[in-house]
Every structure is written in structure tokens, then in C-alpha cells.
Image (cartoon, rainbow, N blue to C red):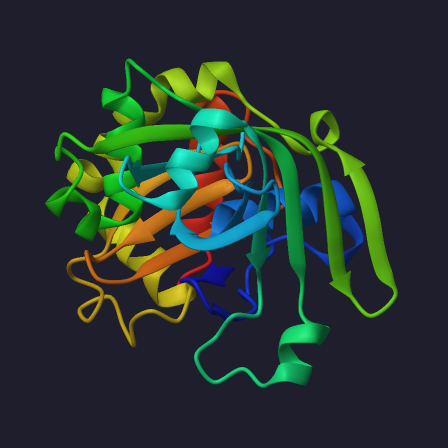
Length: 260
């Protein structure tokens, strides 16, 4: 289980990933799904030098990043001239993390191309779901939705774990599951709120199911589920990959049966 933007706590459930199953590609994908803040590096339009800026993003079903950027920002002006970019995702970026703690934690650099998305209603909503505060500016005329198409990634998973990985080996989508995701999420929130409360307690986000009131499922993909109470985000990765609605039913039922 991976919580919020900064905190990681093991989930005591047999459906949580075991270390033996966490390949560099899976670790990279989990990191992209869990985090929502990163440094975006673009090519300066005037002098060709790297320019880095802080952004927030959401992960799509395949884990590739989408974000809302203002036309007024320097990074957007740079992108208009050159789409090459990299996104640096820090898995140890807690408020109180020391320099040594940050350097010993996992981080991922995603290299690729960033482009605007014209028909962006669904992607915009995904960003707002991940970052509710984005609703304030999402419809401003100067904000556009951008998608990064990853090409390769550089993972530092801790001391001695350093890998270059082709993006094709990291990105993972489940079209059948993705097509049913909205229905699954609505069904869980409307008809199985008790199970969602159990997930929140298991993840350490509430002391008991009564305290978990307000937590809702906000996302599901081949690797796990997202929860939110409107102010906090919680990511739960599962050891069993989900490819179909039937897979999701089995995995979610197994998770809820672990109790609290």
C-alpha cells in the first residue's frame, strides 16, 4: 500500500505486492501511479538549456502522466517549440525527508514527448479526481491538458538498484477493465461502501470503519485501486493483476475479506 504523495506504509494483506514480484518495471509503474507531484524538465525556447519546474500530474490507466498547464508558464512556451521532456518523480519527497533519506529512496525519470490533448474532458476529470484543487482552474481558458508519451525511464529503486527501462516494458493497460472502471467505482461506492471503508482502515487512513466515513474509491487499474476522502489520496497496489471486471471482483472481494 502506498499513501499520498509522501508516505509509504506496508499493507498487511496477502493481496499486497510481495518484494519478489516487484520487478524494476512494476516498481516504476507503481511509483508513477502513487505520486502526483514531479519536476518537469523542458528545453528552454531561447537558449536550448534545460528548464525544470514543479508540476502535479495524474496517471492514466497505462500509468502515463497527464497534467494541466497554463499557456502563461515558461514550460508551456518551451513545449510549443520542443516536445522533448523528462519528468522526475521522487518517491521519497516527504516534507520531513532529509537529504540522505531522499537519496536512498526510490525515484524515476521518465523521458519522452509532451503534447497537448484537444478532446480532453475525460483526462481533465482524471486530473481533478487526483487533485481536487485543480477544479478551480481547470476551465480557465489559458489552461490546457498535456500528456507525456514515455519513451524510456531511469529507475533508482534504492541502493544498488539502478535500471534503464524501455517505456513499453513499464506501461500496462487493461482495456476491458478500463472500459468498466467508472461502473466498478460507482458500484463499490454506492453498494459496497463498507468494503471501501475496510480498505481505508487496512491502509492506515482511518482507525476503524466508522472513522473511514468519507473515503471513496476514485480509481482502479491493472495494478490496484485509488482511494480519497477529498483531502487525502491513498494508493493500494495488489499482487494480483486485474485485466477484466471479473478479475477486479475477485481481487476486491479478497481484499475486503481480510477484515480490519
